[in-house]
Length: 46
Image (cartoon, rainbow, N blue to C red; front, side, top):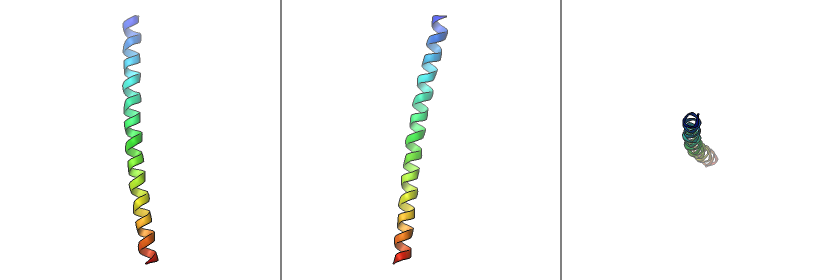
């Protein structure tokens, strides 16, 4: 039983790490999108 529980815990840790990585990537993309929007607004205003 102990090994099964251990395996499950290890899997949960790896999935959490992957989710965290995905979250940071999404944040990067959002930052890029907002920069693009700001650039467009400045371009339209000019």
